[in-house]
Length: 134
Image (cartoon, rainbow, N blue to C red; front, side, top):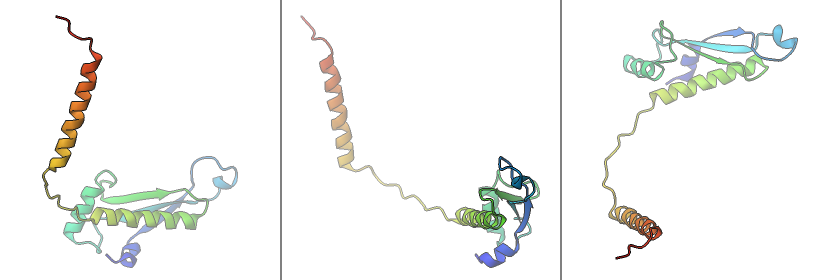
């Protein structure tokens, strides 16, 4: 995956950040919104696009556009860098191949330890009962 080509497909929009902050926050657009069109992307092949669309299933719009926003910092430049970094991490996570799980047996020692602890607990609880008188 070429990150420079991927970054060229991104578009940004800057809007006013919500929340408290006084006069300055009302006139500065520091919140960065990242837009990525997955359907028209030339970086990924069809299989990768399918895998990413499944990974982003709740985050994509109807037009297959991913929108990420960041307003953590008061700096527009810093917010752009943060949202871009978050986007690249999400793409890498979405394309990660899952490891095939190899089924293994439960070790004999683990079974013995579990049964021994079970026996100890059963004895402990049996001792709490009053003795049976004949």
